[in-house]
Length: 290
Image 1: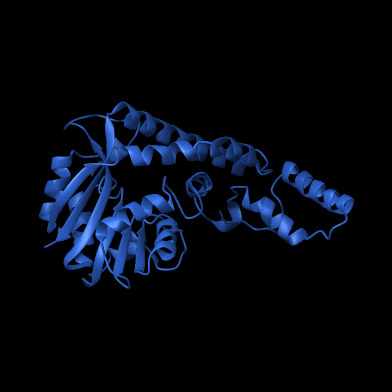
Image 2: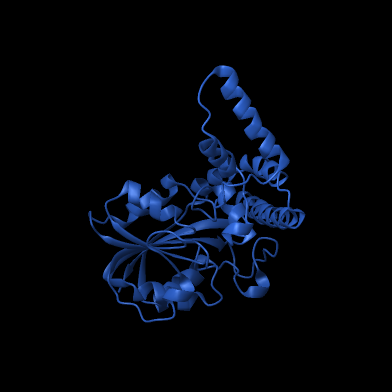
Protein backbone atom coordinates (compact mmCIF):
# COMPACT_ATOMS: atom_id res chain seq x y z
CA UNK A 1 0.00 0.00 0.00
CA UNK A 2 1.25 3.44 -0.87
CA UNK A 3 0.36 6.46 1.22
CA UNK A 4 1.85 9.54 2.77
CA UNK A 5 2.91 9.28 6.40
CA UNK A 6 2.71 13.03 6.98
CA UNK A 7 -0.91 12.95 8.08
CA UNK A 8 -3.01 10.11 9.35
CA UNK A 9 -6.31 9.77 7.51
CA UNK A 10 -8.92 9.53 10.23
CA UNK A 11 -9.89 10.29 13.79
CA UNK A 12 -9.47 6.67 14.84
CA UNK A 13 -5.92 6.53 13.50
CA UNK A 14 -4.98 9.82 15.17
CA UNK A 15 -6.35 8.56 18.48
CA UNK A 16 -4.32 5.39 18.04
CA UNK A 17 -1.18 7.49 17.57
CA UNK A 18 -1.98 9.49 20.70
CA UNK A 19 -2.48 6.23 22.59
CA UNK A 20 0.93 4.97 21.47
CA UNK A 21 2.53 8.24 22.53
CA UNK A 22 0.92 8.02 25.99
CA UNK A 23 1.98 4.37 26.36
CA UNK A 24 5.59 5.29 25.53
CA UNK A 25 5.52 8.04 28.16
CA UNK A 26 3.95 5.72 30.73
CA UNK A 27 6.47 2.95 30.11
CA UNK A 28 9.36 5.41 29.99
CA UNK A 29 10.81 4.75 26.55
CA UNK A 30 11.55 7.14 23.67
CA UNK A 31 8.63 7.73 21.30
CA UNK A 32 9.61 7.56 17.63
CA UNK A 33 6.74 9.49 16.06
CA UNK A 34 7.83 8.96 12.45
CA UNK A 35 8.09 5.20 12.91
CA UNK A 36 4.76 5.02 14.74
CA UNK A 37 3.01 7.05 12.03
CA UNK A 38 4.48 4.81 9.35
CA UNK A 39 3.35 1.68 11.20
CA UNK A 40 -0.19 2.99 11.51
CA UNK A 41 -0.28 4.26 7.94
CA UNK A 42 0.92 0.91 6.58
CA UNK A 43 -2.25 -0.68 7.97
CA UNK A 44 -4.57 1.68 6.10
CA UNK A 45 -5.42 1.39 2.37
CA UNK A 46 -5.28 5.06 1.45
CA UNK A 47 -5.37 6.47 -2.09
CA UNK A 48 -5.43 10.11 -3.07
CA UNK A 49 -1.80 11.18 -3.05
CA UNK A 50 -0.56 7.90 -4.52
CA UNK A 51 -2.75 8.22 -7.61
CA UNK A 52 -3.35 4.46 -7.71
CA UNK A 53 -6.81 3.09 -8.51
CA UNK A 54 -8.85 2.19 -5.44
CA UNK A 55 -9.35 -1.37 -6.67
CA UNK A 56 -5.58 -1.96 -6.72
CA UNK A 57 -5.06 -0.46 -3.27
CA UNK A 58 -7.81 -2.65 -1.82
CA UNK A 59 -6.53 -5.77 -3.62
CA UNK A 60 -2.99 -5.28 -2.34
CA UNK A 61 -4.23 -4.65 1.19
CA UNK A 62 -6.10 -7.97 1.15
CA UNK A 63 -3.77 -10.31 -0.75
CA UNK A 64 -0.49 -8.86 0.47
CA UNK A 65 2.18 -6.41 -0.66
CA UNK A 66 2.78 -6.63 -4.38
CA UNK A 67 -0.26 -8.86 -5.08
CA UNK A 68 -3.42 -7.84 -6.91
CA UNK A 69 -4.85 -11.37 -6.83
CA UNK A 70 -4.45 -14.35 -4.47
CA UNK A 71 -0.93 -15.69 -4.28
CA UNK A 72 1.94 -16.59 -1.96
CA UNK A 73 5.68 -17.33 -2.17
CA UNK A 74 4.92 -21.04 -1.86
CA UNK A 75 2.43 -20.88 -4.71
CA UNK A 76 4.88 -19.03 -6.96
CA UNK A 77 7.66 -21.52 -6.23
CA UNK A 78 5.28 -24.40 -6.93
CA UNK A 79 5.33 -23.43 -10.61
CA UNK A 80 8.95 -22.28 -10.60
CA UNK A 81 9.98 -25.83 -9.75
CA UNK A 82 8.03 -27.15 -12.74
CA UNK A 83 10.38 -25.20 -15.02
CA UNK A 84 13.44 -27.08 -13.75
CA UNK A 85 15.82 -24.32 -14.80
CA UNK A 86 19.43 -23.88 -13.64
CA UNK A 87 20.71 -20.88 -11.70
CA UNK A 88 21.10 -17.57 -13.54
CA UNK A 89 18.37 -18.49 -16.02
CA UNK A 90 16.28 -15.70 -17.54
CA UNK A 91 12.58 -15.97 -16.64
CA UNK A 92 9.53 -13.86 -17.42
CA UNK A 93 6.42 -13.68 -15.24
CA UNK A 94 3.09 -12.83 -16.84
CA UNK A 95 0.52 -11.57 -14.34
CA UNK A 96 3.13 -10.22 -11.92
CA UNK A 97 0.59 -7.93 -10.19
CA UNK A 98 2.42 -5.18 -8.34
CA UNK A 99 5.66 -7.17 -8.16
CA UNK A 100 4.83 -9.86 -5.58
CA UNK A 101 5.76 -12.90 -7.74
CA UNK A 102 9.00 -11.18 -8.78
CA UNK A 103 9.90 -10.75 -5.11
CA UNK A 104 9.11 -14.43 -4.52
CA UNK A 105 11.55 -15.49 -7.25
CA UNK A 106 14.17 -13.04 -6.03
CA UNK A 107 14.10 -14.68 -2.60
CA UNK A 108 13.64 -18.29 -3.75
CA UNK A 109 15.85 -18.56 -6.85
CA UNK A 110 18.96 -17.14 -8.45
CA UNK A 111 17.20 -16.41 -11.72
CA UNK A 112 17.05 -13.14 -13.61
CA UNK A 113 13.33 -12.41 -13.55
CA UNK A 114 11.24 -9.82 -15.39
CA UNK A 115 7.51 -9.30 -14.91
CA UNK A 116 4.53 -8.03 -16.90
CA UNK A 117 1.38 -6.61 -15.35
CA UNK A 118 -2.10 -5.42 -16.32
CA UNK A 119 -1.67 -2.52 -13.88
CA UNK A 120 -0.61 0.80 -15.38
CA UNK A 121 0.27 2.31 -11.99
CA UNK A 122 2.38 -0.42 -10.36
CA UNK A 123 6.01 0.61 -9.98
CA UNK A 124 8.51 -2.10 -9.12
CA UNK A 125 11.91 -3.17 -10.33
CA UNK A 126 11.81 -5.17 -13.59
CA UNK A 127 8.02 -4.75 -13.88
CA UNK A 128 6.49 -3.59 -17.19
CA UNK A 129 2.83 -2.85 -18.08
CA UNK A 130 1.48 -4.97 -20.95
CA UNK A 131 0.50 -1.88 -22.92
CA UNK A 132 4.12 -0.81 -23.09
CA UNK A 133 5.54 -4.26 -23.87
CA UNK A 134 2.97 -5.22 -26.53
CA UNK A 135 3.59 -1.99 -28.42
CA UNK A 136 6.83 -3.36 -29.83
CA UNK A 137 8.35 -6.58 -31.17
CA UNK A 138 10.28 -8.32 -28.41
CA UNK A 139 13.41 -10.45 -28.72
CA UNK A 140 13.16 -14.16 -27.92
CA UNK A 141 15.66 -14.52 -25.09
CA UNK A 142 14.04 -15.97 -21.94
CA UNK A 143 14.73 -19.52 -20.76
CA UNK A 144 11.34 -19.93 -19.08
CA UNK A 145 8.05 -18.30 -18.19
CA UNK A 146 5.20 -18.51 -15.70
CA UNK A 147 1.77 -17.10 -16.48
CA UNK A 148 -0.62 -16.43 -13.61
CA UNK A 149 -4.25 -16.27 -14.84
CA UNK A 150 -3.56 -14.26 -17.99
CA UNK A 151 -5.04 -16.39 -20.78
CA UNK A 152 -8.60 -16.06 -19.47
CA UNK A 153 -8.20 -12.33 -18.90
CA UNK A 154 -7.36 -11.39 -22.49
CA UNK A 155 -10.13 -10.72 -24.99
CA UNK A 156 -7.99 -12.56 -27.55
CA UNK A 157 -6.00 -15.23 -25.67
CA UNK A 158 -4.28 -16.37 -28.88
CA UNK A 159 -2.62 -12.95 -29.18
CA UNK A 160 -1.49 -13.13 -25.56
CA UNK A 161 -0.08 -16.65 -26.07
CA UNK A 162 1.82 -15.41 -29.15
CA UNK A 163 3.19 -12.50 -27.11
CA UNK A 164 4.42 -14.98 -24.48
CA UNK A 165 6.02 -17.15 -27.17
CA UNK A 166 7.73 -14.11 -28.64
CA UNK A 167 9.72 -13.64 -25.43
CA UNK A 168 10.94 -17.24 -25.18
CA UNK A 169 13.82 -19.09 -26.79
CA UNK A 170 13.09 -22.25 -28.75
CA UNK A 171 12.89 -25.13 -26.28
CA UNK A 172 12.16 -22.85 -23.34
CA UNK A 173 9.79 -24.16 -20.66
CA UNK A 174 6.60 -22.35 -19.63
CA UNK A 175 3.86 -22.98 -17.09
CA UNK A 176 0.41 -21.47 -17.58
CA UNK A 177 -1.89 -21.43 -14.54
CA UNK A 178 -5.43 -20.34 -15.29
CA UNK A 179 -9.12 -20.63 -14.49
CA UNK A 180 -10.86 -23.34 -16.53
CA UNK A 181 -14.48 -24.42 -16.87
CA UNK A 182 -15.40 -28.08 -16.75
CA UNK A 183 -17.43 -28.01 -19.96
CA UNK A 184 -17.80 -25.79 -23.01
CA UNK A 185 -20.52 -23.18 -22.72
CA UNK A 186 -20.53 -23.10 -18.93
CA UNK A 187 -21.69 -19.68 -17.73
CA UNK A 188 -20.17 -17.92 -14.73
CA UNK A 189 -21.55 -14.37 -15.13
CA UNK A 190 -20.97 -13.42 -11.49
CA UNK A 191 -17.31 -14.43 -11.52
CA UNK A 192 -15.99 -12.96 -14.75
CA UNK A 193 -16.73 -10.18 -17.21
CA UNK A 194 -18.70 -12.12 -19.81
CA UNK A 195 -19.41 -8.98 -21.83
CA UNK A 196 -15.70 -8.25 -22.16
CA UNK A 197 -15.03 -11.68 -23.64
CA UNK A 198 -12.77 -12.78 -20.79
CA UNK A 199 -14.51 -15.97 -19.70
CA UNK A 200 -12.40 -19.03 -18.81
CA UNK A 201 -12.02 -21.75 -21.43
CA UNK A 202 -12.00 -25.54 -21.26
CA UNK A 203 -8.73 -27.46 -21.10
CA UNK A 204 -9.01 -28.50 -24.76
CA UNK A 205 -9.56 -24.88 -25.82
CA UNK A 206 -6.48 -23.74 -23.88
CA UNK A 207 -4.44 -26.53 -25.45
CA UNK A 208 -5.47 -25.38 -28.92
CA UNK A 209 -4.67 -21.74 -28.11
CA UNK A 210 -1.17 -22.67 -26.91
CA UNK A 211 -0.59 -25.02 -29.86
CA UNK A 212 -1.47 -22.23 -32.31
CA UNK A 213 1.06 -19.95 -30.58
CA UNK A 214 3.89 -22.46 -30.87
CA UNK A 215 3.75 -24.34 -27.56
CA UNK A 216 3.66 -28.08 -26.93
CA UNK A 217 1.70 -28.99 -23.79
CA UNK A 218 3.71 -31.65 -21.97
CA UNK A 219 1.61 -31.93 -18.81
CA UNK A 220 -1.68 -30.56 -17.48
CA UNK A 221 -3.41 -30.95 -14.14
CA UNK A 222 -5.91 -29.63 -11.61
CA UNK A 223 -4.30 -27.35 -9.01
CA UNK A 224 -7.50 -26.17 -7.31
CA UNK A 225 -6.65 -27.77 -3.92
CA UNK A 226 -3.45 -25.70 -3.71
CA UNK A 227 -5.23 -22.44 -4.61
CA UNK A 228 -8.30 -22.55 -2.34
CA UNK A 229 -6.35 -22.21 0.96
CA UNK A 230 -4.76 -18.97 -0.29
CA UNK A 231 -8.19 -17.37 -0.68
CA UNK A 232 -9.43 -18.76 2.64
CA UNK A 233 -6.38 -17.52 4.56
CA UNK A 234 -6.60 -13.99 3.16
CA UNK A 235 -10.31 -13.80 3.97
CA UNK A 236 -9.46 -12.79 7.54
CA UNK A 237 -8.13 -9.47 6.18
CA UNK A 238 -11.50 -8.25 4.94
CA UNK A 239 -12.73 -7.06 8.35
CA UNK A 240 -9.46 -5.29 9.14
CA UNK A 241 -9.50 -3.46 5.80
CA UNK A 242 -13.15 -2.50 6.24
CA UNK A 243 -12.35 -0.97 9.65
CA UNK A 244 -9.34 0.86 8.21
CA UNK A 245 -11.40 2.38 5.39
CA UNK A 246 -13.87 3.61 8.00
CA UNK A 247 -11.08 5.80 9.41
CA UNK A 248 -10.76 7.84 6.21
CA UNK A 249 -12.03 11.39 6.80
CA UNK A 250 -12.57 12.27 3.12
CA UNK A 251 -16.14 11.10 2.46
CA UNK A 252 -15.67 10.78 -1.32
CA UNK A 253 -12.47 8.77 -0.95
CA UNK A 254 -14.05 6.61 1.75
CA UNK A 255 -17.03 5.84 -0.51
CA UNK A 256 -14.73 5.04 -3.44
CA UNK A 257 -12.69 2.64 -1.33
CA UNK A 258 -15.80 0.94 0.05
CA UNK A 259 -17.20 0.45 -3.45
CA UNK A 260 -13.92 -1.05 -4.60
CA UNK A 261 -13.81 -3.35 -1.61
CA UNK A 262 -17.44 -4.48 -2.08
CA UNK A 263 -16.84 -5.29 -5.74
CA UNK A 264 -13.62 -7.17 -4.99
CA UNK A 265 -15.27 -9.13 -2.18
CA UNK A 266 -18.22 -10.12 -4.38
CA UNK A 267 -15.94 -11.19 -7.21
CA UNK A 268 -13.75 -13.45 -5.09
CA UNK A 269 -16.60 -14.82 -3.00
CA UNK A 270 -18.28 -16.00 -6.21
CA UNK A 271 -15.06 -17.43 -7.61
CA UNK A 272 -14.36 -19.21 -4.33
CA UNK A 273 -17.79 -20.82 -4.32
CA UNK A 274 -17.45 -21.81 -7.99
CA UNK A 275 -14.09 -23.44 -7.27
CA UNK A 276 -15.42 -25.29 -4.23
CA UNK A 277 -18.52 -26.51 -6.10
CA UNK A 278 -16.50 -27.79 -9.05
CA UNK A 279 -17.95 -25.43 -11.67
CA UNK A 280 -14.53 -23.83 -11.97
CA UNK A 281 -11.03 -25.17 -11.45
CA UNK A 282 -7.42 -24.06 -11.51
CA UNK A 283 -5.67 -25.66 -14.45
CA UNK A 284 -1.91 -25.73 -14.91
CA UNK A 285 -0.23 -26.56 -18.23
CA UNK A 286 3.50 -27.18 -18.46
CA UNK A 287 4.68 -26.45 -21.98
CA UNK A 288 7.74 -26.22 -24.20
CA UNK A 289 8.29 -23.55 -26.84
CA UNK A 290 8.64 -25.06 -30.30
